[in-house]
Image 1 (spheres, rainbow, N blue to C red):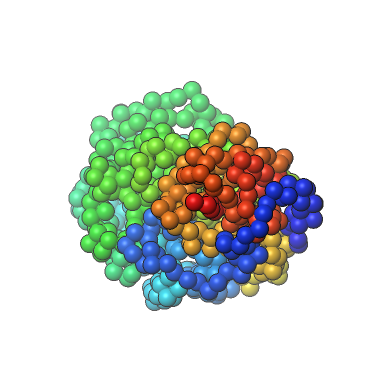
Image 2 (image 1 turned 90 degrees about the vertical axis):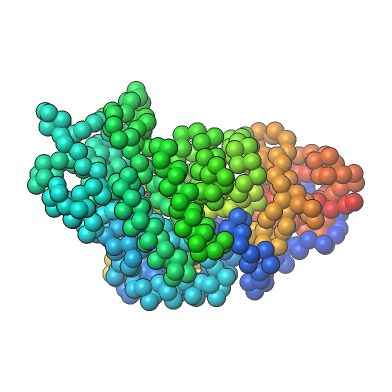
Length: 591
Ligand code: GLC
């Protein structure tokens, strides 16, 4: 499919606007930068702070590529696609859990922290994945789940065996209330109650997530020791860092008071009310663990990164996750852009300003899609210009200060494809809350590699989740061949970023307050770049001032655009006209 109307309809519109440009060729033209050169590395990439501005690519291994024909992706599947990922230009892969697991929560219920689930492969295959990635200068980030285990983990099996088992205190057990009710009103993230009664020992155990995911008791130092040793196990195998799961939930207030209940219905439910998680989230003791966990990472050298999954209610709360002395998470996840529910320049500008204020120069993350949330492609798309909008979002993530996280398939515009019938739902939370919430299957469908059978994902009869119908036209093979596809735009934008000191290391400065155009400058000592993202379907004219650009007599030269522009011309900074839904970056030239 030609996903583009651009070079036909939009191009003619633009010819009118581009009369402003004059000739020059210092920045590679769009055309020349489409031919991404072999993977070259700047020296910055090899130093210990590679993680600050790496481009991260999240892989959900079940859904990436299946090499053994069982309908489920595997580690060898990731290894097989490393050349694709290197060509795309990503620096690091975050791989969601592949450890042995009953797969109730598709790997976030771990039954052995130091092995690979046979359906994903073996430890030897994991080692090969690490070494093949490293050969291509791609780092490996594992996902670590330290708040809870599977109920099938030997620790929990022991813990539930008897009240006096040595592992009893590794989990959170409490007596029922005198009337038999759970110890308090805490609700689970995945269902109504966070407590399950265990007949055998006549106590309740606490689980923030599914009953099959009992919470570990982080007040017991043996728990910390065991978890940290498993972290060391993977560092020793060469992993470059961890994305640490559900970090807010480690400790609970030992008095276990009821949480305040709000008058808002839970987003997923028609009957349950939202709780303020006052006593079971973000407890002060968590932050001590983060600091000690960082100590474990530091044992393995300065280049290991810890990325924390946190959903604080207020953006200001993000600051604490870096640690008082910047000795906790290097990259706390910042999901505040993802909270926006429509494409809106003012919202993005405000959120980035707040992020910058809170981070105070520290590295930040930006992310719009992941395995727990609907994909950005259709969330922000207007149904008619989704491809252009996807490019705007890609260029935004790739040109803001900090580390962008992309989710597999985002680079080909995969959309959320929810199950149509309850019996097709795989994610248990979707079964609980159907039909108001259909679970997370929609954002976890198989990667679309080709227009062939099962989108080239698997040779199996059936795949663990169905392949979306869009795969016929929206797939890597087809879109690689279309010069103006989203995929090729991603490659160009990543390539631009890699070679730009301003985009990697420069300051961030927002420009103007146009309601439709999010524009900003990134300024490093040796280079300044200006980025302009037109989030409307009308052309818009922007004015930059000499002051914005750092001095008199400045001009702009196109570095990238998702529309057809003549890259050889210098642009008058007083009148920068953007086409509808244009995403462009310019290098500032002049004195
Ligand atoms: C995190 C994961 C999510 C998982 C949950 C429980 O939020 O991202 O997928 O279900 O933790 O481990």
